Length: 237
Image (cartoon, rainbow, N blue to C red; front, top):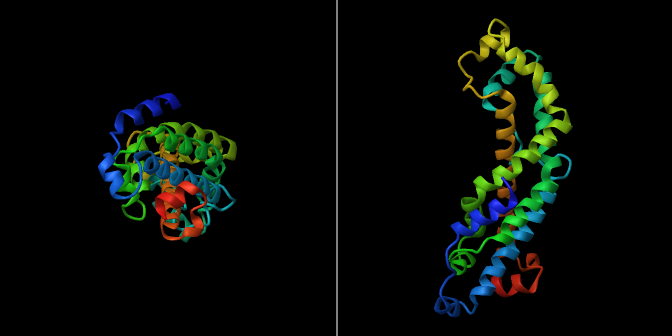
């Protein structure tokens, strides 16, 4: 999915801003409210993706750590009990390293999404809960963002060696007469394990970003120190 498609899709989903009368009620203009929301989300996206893009940003954080897909997670647990899970454990580490490596590209995608939308009922979001803007962004952009993030994630999975590690595992899972094949019989949904891993890591990486975008939005709302621009101070002050 091209970025232009994302922008058009988001534009179609957005409605008009709050009325001037409601804006006056809060001492804000419609433009100020919309600008404040975009500024807050942009700052939150930069901080969240920078945090997650560090080494162990995903891997060592229990809030966002990416496990193996459910199709192989039970097998990993069984093999770990007898000391035979190393190959699957290595794959899990590579998935998290791939998500970390994808964050610079994901940051650009998120910030583009933030800047391209016109927020519906912006004043309500400004005066809403601690992560109202994040929830709004997530509800309206998850599908198009996934379409943009997945190809980048596939590139990092390839570069990290995850696909090379995955290939013999998938072959063993496909061998219905083998040990792993017998364990996995009946669990396949027809999707290749490579595609399932790519989809799963992409969605979990996206969920991790939204989690910390929400945390950063909460910090902006609660602590004046985090309001680093005049528009943030005027809108959330």
